[in-house]
Every structure is written in structure tokens, then in C-alpha cells.
Length: 521
Image 1 (cartoon, rainbow, N blue to C red):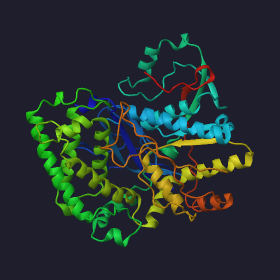
Image 2 (image 1 turned 120 degrees about the vertical axis):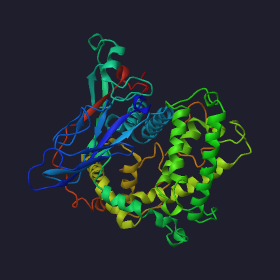
Image 3 (image 1 turned 180 degrees about the vertical axis):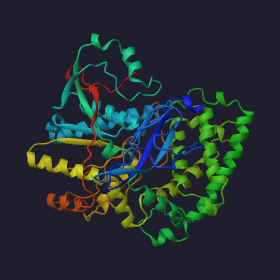
Image 4 (image 1 turned 180 degrees about the horizontal axis):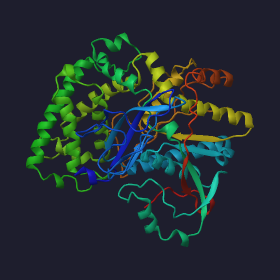
């Protein structure tokens, strides 16, 4: 059923290793594509792949899947590379939510107001880079439209306003040709200025460079649940009002999840669930809700506590937040023991959320390294090329004597590893405790986030969007030379990749020389 739903995509994650000889074509015999689902594909001969697909010498799969295929290339090595292994991940859903539209626009508008006060000339020299992940690019497009309102940056080209943008919003056709036909013949439409967003897969897409190290870290996440661990390690986050130890909290979560599974299954059998909530957003429905939660129940209820995987806490916390923001009526009703009717006196969901949040804050930041040396090493392997580019941006502005703004849009994982590089660079840190990184979280490097602590009780309107929190200083303003010295200390370890990939661009139309409102379709 899911294969035809909006948002379906496949992502191929190859892992390369440097070799002295020429690149081996295809995949060595016995190579395996492992999937995060019930499907596994084994490639036993070079050039083989899924039925009807073509595996190219560079390790890309094209065709045969009926879904878009996105490849991510490991970075940090030069010279010839041999495809050692790769992973094919199928994702269903992943739609850009309507709440994200408002948050992206608000972030762009707020930054524009700040810059207009500090130095409005910066808005005439703007560069915006984005990963190829479509939710990320959608955020960048709407942000750019809001940021550049009433300002025309210098990197503007003439393009057709009917030119399709490569990111459909929910419920719009995902192909360029269909959007072009809906917009009318591109030959009949006048040209207008367009701002170009630059896609940098090498800097901002998922990377497998630190996969082995991160896999090893995840195997040791259970140590965080030991009694007294949060007291022995003050850098760990554990709420002071949470008297129970993490291991006990895990047991309480398992008990709550077992209770909710029984209640949900009973309500699906005895209640007309389609009538609980008539309007659904983000392409969701009762079927998908149940499937998502059944998977969580399997992870929490059907394993012995000693076999429990702490990394699953992130999925539980994300599911609670998503449902509380977008489908709160259904969430409280389907887990109610009152025949599918929400009971205001039932606080079990609040209890589950509080415990999931505490465990998430404890575990999630450690997925990018438990020890300081691991955090730094994973940061080097994952985000050093991005940090190198940021330092080059700072140097360019300083040497030019002018002003400018460069923005990079990427995923939460890259922000975690980039922040860790800064934290362990040797710079004096003003606020070493990093809050939860949520949608619209960002780190700013100056030359001269959207989050709520309890989404179950937060006030929402039809936007289903949280407000962006004020910025917190990671460091005070420091001497420029010291900052560049500290941030550059690892640059020698990973040479720049000499295999430059052609850059892709996305045109954001600027109506009458000004940015549009970012809405499409």
C-alpha cells in the first residue's frame, strides 16, 4: 500500500575506500544492499541491481524501482575510490509540512529584519546552499523568498517563472513535466529575475564517512542507562526533577507502551476511527498512524529490557511530537480507554512524553559520540568539509572589505556534528549545553531555533507551527585570528576532495525584481 503514497523515495548510500589502482567497475562479488525494512537485495555480479535497474560503474542505481533514487557520496578521500559497500534505504512519507512553511518564512523574515538593522548591504550579497534532500530544499526556497523580500541580490539570473522547481509540496505531482504542463507552455511566459539556490551534496547531504564509528557508538549507548551514569558524567543531560534512574525510566516507558498498544488495538477494532478526526494533514491517515505506532510497539514491547536499543527513543519522541502537533485529536482519542473519546483526566500520554523527552535528551546527542574524542572524530569525518567552506567564506568577506551573507541548509545530523567541531575546537565556550536541535535550529558564524518543551500542552493554531526561540550565544565575540586558528586545526587531516561534482541550482522566481512569497501550487 505504501509504495504509491506521496513522498516515496529510495536513497543509495555508498561507502568508498581509497585504492591505488583504478576504480573497480560495479560491485565486487557477494556485495549486499541491506535495507531498513523487510526487503533485501543482494548483488552477486558487477552491474546487477534491483529488477529492471541499472547499476552504473560509479555505484548509482537508475530505474527499476518506480521511485526517485538519491545517491550520497562519501567524502574525505582523494584519488581512486573503490565502492566497498552500500545501503539502499526506502522512505515513505517525508513530506514537507505546512507548519514548516510558516517556520521557514518566519525565520527568513526575522533574519531580514535583523540584517536590515545591522547592515542591509548584506542582503545584496547573498549565497544560499542546500542539500538535495527535498524537505531541506523546500525550507531553503521559502526562507530565501522571505529573506529577499524587497531586496534583489547580485547573483540573479533571467529565468522563466514557469520553470519547475524540483521539490513538490504535499499533494502536488512530483515530476517536472507535470508541473510544467500545469503552468502552461514555458515558451508563452515572460522571463523574470530568479535567485539561484545551489545544491551541494558533497557538503550538506548525508555522509557515510563516519558510519563505522557511529555504529560502534550506538552499540555502547546502553552504558548511558546504567545507574549513576548521569552523576558520574556531568556533561550528560538528565532532568533534576526526574528522580528515577534512566534504566527505571526505560522500564516505565515499556509498561506505558504495552498499555497503549492494548488500548489502540481495541479502539481500532471497536471504534470507527475514520470519524475520530475528519481532517488529516501531511498526507497522514489512521492506517499510517497505526503502522507507525505498531513498529514502535515492536521495538519497545517485544524485546527484553537488556536487549533494548536506546536509539529507538528518538523515533518514539519524534512520533509523539509529530502526532501532538498535527493529529492531537486522534492521538488522545485512539489511546483513550474511554471508547475512543479523549479523557482530559488521563495523563498517561503526558507521562510517556516526559519520559521519552528525558531519554531523548540523554541519548540523542551521544549518537554522534559518547566520549569527547569520538564526538570530535565523527565531526571531522562528517562536517569538516562544511566547516572548511565556512572558514573560507569568513576569510573572503574579511579580505574583500565588504559584507555578505552565506546560508547553508542541511539536516539535523550535520548540525550536531558541526556544533561538536566548534565545541571541541579549543574556543572558549559560553554555553556548552546545547538545547534540543529541532526544525529551524541553526548555528551562526558572525564576522564583527523552533522548539517547545512540551508539545502536548502547547497552544497551536491552524498552522501547527511552533515559534522560533531567541538565539543563544555559543561563544562570545572573539578575536578573529584565534577563531580561524581553532576552527582550522583539523583541516590538514582530511584533504579537500579533488573530484568536484557539477553543481545543481534551483531557481526561486523574484516577481518584479523582488522575492515571491515562496508558495507554490
